[in-house]
Image 1: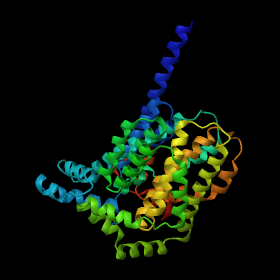
Image 2: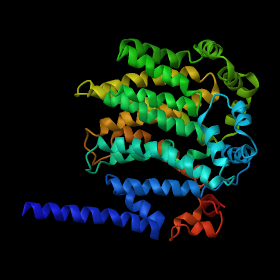
Image 3: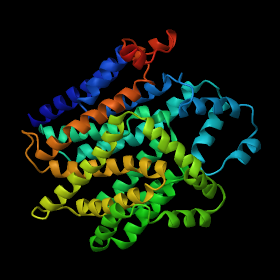
Image 4: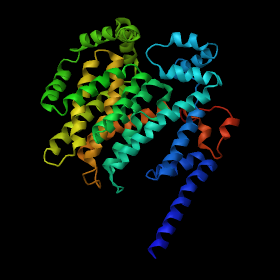
Length: 411
């Protein structure tokens, strides 16, 4: 009797998985939504991955001046270069130029280029969310749902318009979490690979190595974290010295980010940004700081896993790094988003131990900034989403042309 039941379960489970693929080809977006609600199913995750690649292949790239447009122009330029000419122009970031050059041997159409990056970033994006889901039971928990939504939107797949930084972020995050939560130090090799995608990840890799060598020395990390809020520009000379030590293109890149005219331009751009964007970013940062402090205080009375203790200690170093790096506007600002990922994961581990029928006071404090943050990320992302990909029939947009979702919703 048991063997018949097991055979029936196996049959229905495998047939159910086939439906994800069938639905995806009939109506990709509906198939994607169905897969999202069944994320724990391996085949559902594969369908989500296919949808991300589909998005990349149909990527709308019609806004002059943004990074993605520059990358598409560079793809065309690379098609005219020999390998020796191309290699002589490569500096600190090796992966993106090499991928661009290789794809330019096949085509100068950027659809394949962005499909590749959607596949690359999407792999680590989904693996990180999968790692998150493994920590939780499937029961309903409103507090967990709020933070899972935040986690997903901190650096969504639509961020591939910037390519290097978001891809490096997810590569580093996934590798670092395997080191911190699972204690698997071979993933340090993966975190190092993030430096080949975006040179600045050399710095956070050094931070991670310092943590691995020193361990959970909170008696040292806490005073440093407090000092970073009081004297954020204290380590600027050290960053400058490190760039000189590395020399070459690393020094040139650092000089470019830290020269006075560039910093003034960044500050001017921030001043011209919408007031709620500036307030939202600051509110989100300090809300997560408050959340970490709250969880730490509460967890003094609760049993903590080794992974949770490791993550808290690394967060102390990471927030110090973000604050000290804030003297260089784009540097500290960029790594806030890396901090957001680790911080939200840490708080999620706490919510996994609590009742989720009512919204927790921490979430009551952060609900508005989280909502605004998610809405802004969605609004930005709609500029690269092809609206036709939401329609039935796989591949239909290839015969219609580009139409950004932002032009449908907001124009």
